Image 1 (tube, rainbow, N blue to C red):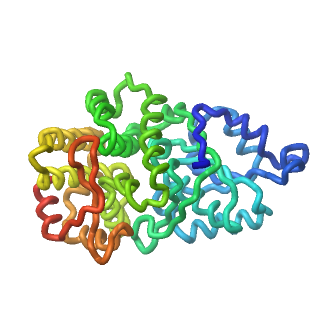
Image 2 (tube, rainbow, N blue to C red):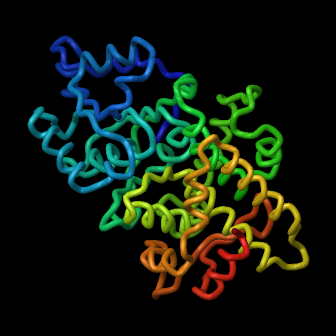
Image 3 (cartoon, helix red, strand yellow):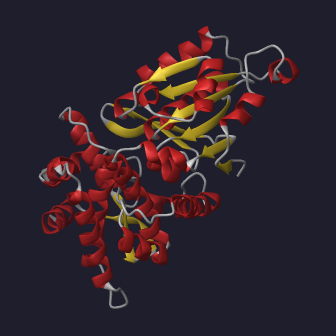
Length: 360
């Protein structure tokens, strides 16, 4: 894989290599920089150098959230790049959370059949999941990530100092994806996460982000185009995406991590119901209760409460449209035990309804 991950990479380094000034790299290699940035950045107390970056290069602002992951927003960005004179050998720098990096990476991977792009994730979810692995997706007709590309950035520049700018809810949002990595691949990491919780003052974010990255990178390097092993990264996502689609239909804002967290609880119950004699069922049940505790512990438990009240029959309608399905069969991921996942597991509607009702 060509993608590189640079921890604590300074934005000044980008200014050294990307600028619209004639004395810069542009005159030497024909490379200029353009920025697609989350509009929330304007109200964030970010390092001065990031603001200097925004002052030096052309910027296209987007409002983050699932609504930005649309063909309409992609077309706006393509039109801006074209109007700004961006060429095939220029670089798009994408600054923001997971939905922003999804949109920006899709735009970069399709504009002029693909231009170089650099990701600067500013949320925990972006750092441990969305910016890692080269999958870029847009939503279509309420279906999550129905359109997308496999295209890797030249670099992912991670600075965990961004995490100090985030509200508690956004930390929990990313913590759910980090939990997913641990549950499917790293029993020791999951045990440590259970002990700490998402808001513990003793968390070493640099190490946790690195460990989360390492899990995903290892899987992606084996199966970049998701033909086999990479499918385990969808743990909790079939139900999670269905919840997000239902929320979009109801015009309700639902964070991706919260939806995936509820999806993992459902998948853990499914795992228990399908456990064999070698499975430690108690650890799976304990993991489910831990996720519930974290999702309920927020000052605003409304997202969790809304999710668990959804009709499983309605959710099933969205699950039938999931891109991972084959021959009209819903395929999902469950655990054999903590740290060991099974993918391409068929699930029937009646079974899902039983699982959903027993889980919540």
